[in-house]
Amino acid sequence: MSSHHPGPAGRTVGRVRSLLVRRVPEKVGGRARLKVITLLACVLALESADAATIGATAPQLEAALNIGNTQVGLLVSVSTGIGAIATLPAGALTDRINRTGLLAGAILVWSVALALGGLSTSYQMLLLTRVALGAIVATAGPTVASLTGDYFPVSERGRIYGFVLSGELVGAGVGLMLSGDIAAALSWRVAFWALALPGLVLAWVIWRNLPEPARDGSWRLPYGAQRIRPHKRAADKTPDPDQDPATDNRAGQEVRKKGVDPRPGLVLEEDLTKKSLWWAVRYVLRVPTNRVLIVSSALGFFFFSGLRTFAVVFLRGRYHLGQGTANMVLFMIGIGAIVGVLAGGRIADLLLERHRVSARPVIAGICFLIAVGFFLPGLSTTTLLIAAPLFFIAAAGLGGANPPLDAARLDLMPGRLWGRAEAVRTVLRYALGAAAPVLFGLVSAWLGGTNEHSYGAKHPVSVQGAAGLADAFSLMLFPLFVAGLLILFWARGTYPRDVATAVASDEAVREHEDAAA
Image 1: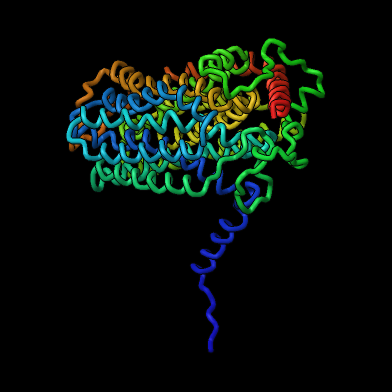
Image 2: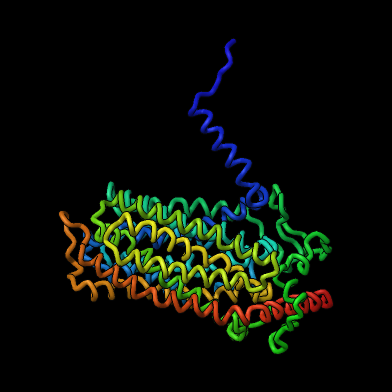
């Protein structure tokens, strides 16, 4: 009997399988962690892919429905705007009810609404279906932030957030590339349906496979875990010496070593789950560093939202590219954003380990300024070979700011307020995100000086419109520049004291709960 020896293709498949089965879980700390990170990343991926799909199918939508850049932007703005309105109640629910069930339900509603959008026979009908899509917009931010905070130790949040947030960029890339190709080859309707199906599957997987973690910090997913075990700490209050919340907070330890005092008027000592939503909003906005990070994060998302919506239209018109080539260029630029996301949080965590207390906000601010510094010259050239490397680095800067920003916001809030605190941030983030596509479309039409309805079979993308988009992108970089300066010159100084305040509040709340029990 002769033995079978795999050929080159078989050996390559074997190496890839070994990488996925062994090395990837090792990088994130075990199979259980990989599972949680993957599911949370998929939630953000679906949300981002939805908005990117509108941008990717923009040429087909504009031709089929006789609309222009402004109307395309409005399709994204409606779902984002409704999400902004619904975010505060979603954040309150996040702090009170089962988060994984809430998340699964929102994804289910989103998938059904997206499938119905593919059946639209007019622009008005398509616009109406976007209203229901605000469900996932409202729910994703608070629940993902709260679950990340309870599943993973404080000292690793920047790195973990890098993995989770990479889902947002992967989703945008998938939405731009696959949806654009599907729309060009088949129909924009099929592109919508192709995105709805994974949403239904994800809702079921989350419902069945993602247990609710403890909210009190007494249990977190340990490094090397192979299974996601249901938490028991919340019920029996049995202390776990290996997962003491006071010892895994690197930022908290550093501010104590440096003798940083908390803000007396902001230290909380009562049961936070019983506090009203509006009390929580007022408290979140009273924390100085949090106000700066909320505004800065929203300004960053403002630019990303406009860029994501019109990237395909810009590349095709500016550099005279076909749909497939434009998608490939975006894929390469997207790799830069993913590199930035994975590196930004990790660098901040490494600096924190080296006793740089304000490392997270500082890295975020530097990343925003890098994005501005490389986007500007890239937008000014009409030569793709020059622009593409500049866009790659700029995308890395834009993506790299998010993990340390998100980790820093959790550092500033007691754990029992994470859902509502993230909801407050998300309201402004998505309010600006909702305005961005419409504003980018209007400004591009104004600066381009062209009729938006100049799309046709021979010239599906307006060159003048793309020139207007380049000017609009350049103008909209100013808020991103302001965000970087705010973080570096304001939040860097207030961050240590606000971290000390959050640590003191967590300890006082735990003592109150133990006394009540």
